[in-house]
Amino acid sequence: MLKVTNISKTFFKGTSNEKKALNGLSLTLNDGDFCTVIGGNGAGKSTLLNAIAGAYIPDAGTIEINGTDVTRVSEYKRAKYIGRVFQDPLKGTAAGMQVEENLLLASRRGESRRLKWAFSAGDHEKYRDMVARLDLGLEDRLGTRIGLLSGGQRQALTLLMATMKKPDILLLDEPTAALDPKTASKVLKITDEIVTEQHLTTLMITHNMRDALKYGNRLIMMNSGRIIADYTPEEKKNLTIEDLLKKFEETSGTVSDRVALG
Ligand SMILES: Nc1ncnc2c1ncn2[C@@H]1O[C@H](COP(=O)(O)OP(=O)(O)OP(=O)(O)O)[C@@H](O)[C@H]1O
Ligand SMILES: [Mg+2]
Image (cartoon, rainbow, N blue to C red; front, side):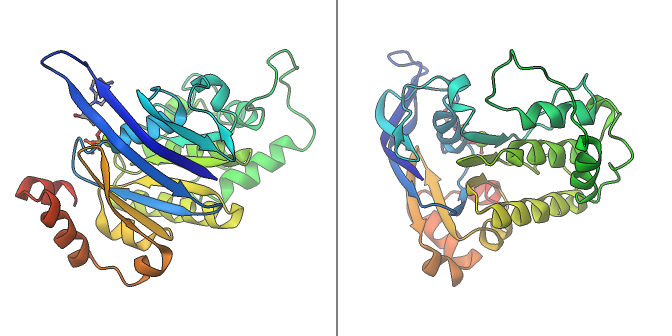
């Protein structure tokens, strides 16, 4: 479903600020793989997700989604195949629009903008059921402007919107980092349910090693723009936090990185 081959990305090439964010990285995800991504600050995790989404074009290497080479396809065109949730709850939704309007927009992702964007019979009930499932008290707030909701409510809605039309790849960049622990675990649980039910091929960055182990069937660890460990579903089953710390310290380990990993 996702085949990343030997991609590199250097920012500020040829200047004193030159930074190799991705360094010959390769990764293959099979249909339905749910892969968690860990690594210290600056390891290249977000750059990897941005390259897959088309926000940055890699300097070298290729990216295939579902058998199609998308390396040079624009971010806008790629959005049809990709669902995203960012760390910042403000990023995934249109603040000035109602909950219901945001959901309608998401249901039309990738369709022509010339089509009439109107609600159909039954939409209201459908959306009500969808948000009721989040268990965040949104079922009576379909008419509320998104900007008035809490961060947790917004992240859960962003997740619904990202998966409303089944994406080929779901990219989650620390989706619960801005949420309080209780809301974070609620949103993660819903994420896991949606990913499993829809059999979504997913990459999820997290700084919480417990979550990285608990969720998904694959786990990769990044450092200096490379994947330094790639655990298969079989290997992941028996993996512990101690194993991860040991692996990390073998490669780069400093105390601050250890802290950064959660
Ligand atoms: N747009 C950009 N312009 C310049 N440098 C960038 C840009 N984006 C990322 N970098 C640099 O590339 C490196 C990798 O950054 P990236 O954001 O991918 O790390 P990360 O693993 O997501 O870290 P964090 O855990 O802090 O989110 C860092 O040194 C960062 O400063
Ligand atoms: Mg990041």
